Amino acid sequence: MRKIYRVLTVILLNLLLLFAPVLETANGLRATSLKRLPTPLSVSATSNKFEADVSALYCETNLEQSGLKRSVFEYAYKGYLYLLEQHKLNRSNVISICDFSQSSRSRRLYVVDLENKKILVNTYVAHGRRSGGEYAKSFSNNRSSHKSSLGFYITDDTYVGKHGLALKIHGLEKGFNDKADRRNIVVHGSKYVGEDYLKTNRINGRSFGCPAIPLNDVDDVIDNIKGGSCLFIFYPAKKYLLGSKILNS
Image (tube, rainbow, N blue to C red; front, side):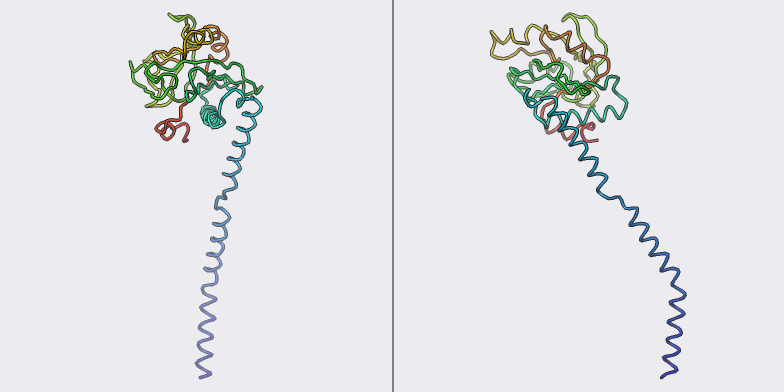
C-alpha cells in the first residue's frame, strides 16, 4: 500500500508542477481583467458635475423667480452641451428657451447669458395658432400646419421682411423641426404679442408657427441670439422627450 501511496503522491506532484504556470497565468488574467473593468465612479462623477453645473446656473441666474422650471432648464442645458461638443455653435455664451408649457400670458421666452449668469431678456412669445389657445398642446413639423415645432435650433442671419427685422433659425431634429426652413419659421416681431396686446385681449395672439415676440423686444432679442446660438422650444410631449436624439444622446 505504501508503494501505491508513494506512486500517487509523485503523480500528483508532477501534475501540480505541470499546471502551475497555466493556473498562474489564468489568475493573472483574471486580476488584469478585474482591474480593467470600468467602475461606475467615472459615470457618477460626470453625472454629478452636470447636476452641479445645472443647479449653480439655475440658481445664480434667478430662473426660478422668472418662472422657468429647473427641469426645463436641465433639458435645455443638456442639449446645449451636446451642440457645443458637436461644434455646432458659433455663439456659445448664450442660450434662449421658449417654454411652451407656460401660459401665453406669461413671459416664457428666456435669453440667458451663461458666462455672466444672468437673464438678458425675459419676454412674451407666441405659439402657432393650431397648437392651442392660451396653452400650446399640439405640435407639428409639417408645412401649412400652423403649429409650433419642438426641439433645438441654431440661429442664423437676420433679414428684413414683411414683419420687419427677423431672424432665420434652423431646426436640428429630424421629424420634429427639420422642416423649419421650408416652413419659413423665423423669429420676428408682432403687434399681437406683448403687454399692450394683453391690455385688450385675454391671451396673446398666435402665429403660423413662428416664435413671434413683442415689437419692442425684437432688436434686443435678435441682437443677443443671432449668428449661431442655441434656441430650444420646449413642451413636455412624451413623443418628443423619448424621440429626441439630442436629449437622449
